[in-house]
Length: 176
Length: 176
DNA sequence: AAGCCCATGTAACTGGTTACATGATTCT
DNA sequence: AGAATCATGTAACCAGTTACATGGGCTT
Image (cartoon, rainbow over all chains, first blue to last red; front, top):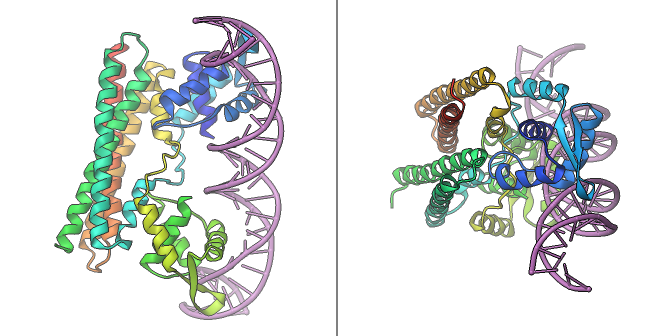
């Protein structure tokens, strides 16, 4: 149940409302870390409050509630952080497709692999721009965003390199 | 609905039973590409047969049915292979944890990050061995296993490098 | 007053996991 | 004969998505 720990972590960093949490997921976490929509977040916050992991530390306009973690919550977060990674089932459509390349004919294979490499390289270029924008942004706390962007950069570079490597390997055994 | 296309791809490569497909997921796809259990596979095969994408090409002992793709199925597979990647919501517990590193105290942060980098490096070492085993295996068709292993190698190397980089960045702002 | 963002919730549905259930064949 | 593996299915449950629904407050 990683959603619970993602929320716990965000609240441990900064107490905030469900609405703020939703935006954080959208803006920084959803690219490479974790996704959640408000319809999942609000009920989970309620369950966590029932479980004594979070508490309401303030109420604002429009019925908004600011949540913070309790001591129990912080202990649970730490326990989870140090627990072994749950080996969640893989779901990677990019890898799946490269796996199934052999079902295409040679021309299709080359075109598609080239295509996939190029798309990844475009992502890399986009992320380089995003990073320089983040680094020039004077407002301080863009650390999460910077980490995520760096991961993305490296990840798409990996995809591109790997796709090109696969093409080379295919070429060795089935030369034009 | 990638499960459908994974099945279509595996059947396009080799006609086989639901049981065989289940084993293929367990053995080669589940590491980095896609996961599925038999309880998901059998009903999906039935739906695909209703949709005319696959057909029963043979029946064996114990009521086993061998499926193969139809022309429609192969066309649908190719269409999907060339369609844009569906940007599925990210679910990466490793990245999530590194994201939440700053919620720990400095000693914990260092220990955990070191830990995560080391675990990734162990995976790298394991995959190097797996690769040399694959390359020495005389039985021909290990190409796709080799591709998957290469992806894994590069991916865990990325995790390790990125984990070490994040630690360095954290150190810059919270010096010892 | 209109439009936009803030802010919270519920309901229906889908994809996927875990558990339940059964029987045939092969191997030792 | 007993154990392991082959082989297929269903049912209950869980996590997550999409759609539905409501209202407050701020800006122009």
